[in-house]
Image (cartoon, rainbow, N blue to C red; front, side, top):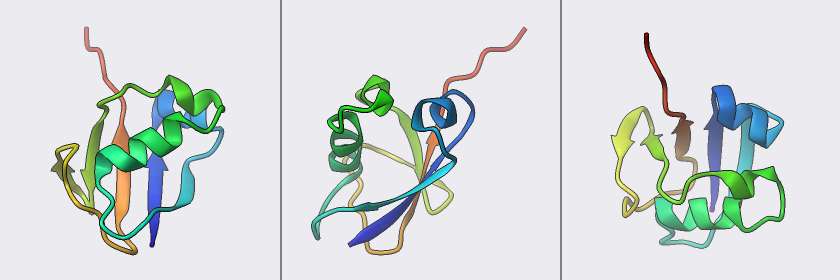
Length: 81
């Protein structure tokens, strides 16, 4: 299956793009996507092990199952002042 990943702010800087299509096996979960991105030997290896994500515009836990065509947005931490 293919999921569309979106990166914002510092995560976009790590990815070098704002969007990637990632192929995953059927039944994969958010945690599997994160592991795959972190294992690529790219700057994405610096993603946190448990980043905040939204699947199809709803916040989702690491154990959320993904489906073909899902959109997974990686939401970086923010600081205010």
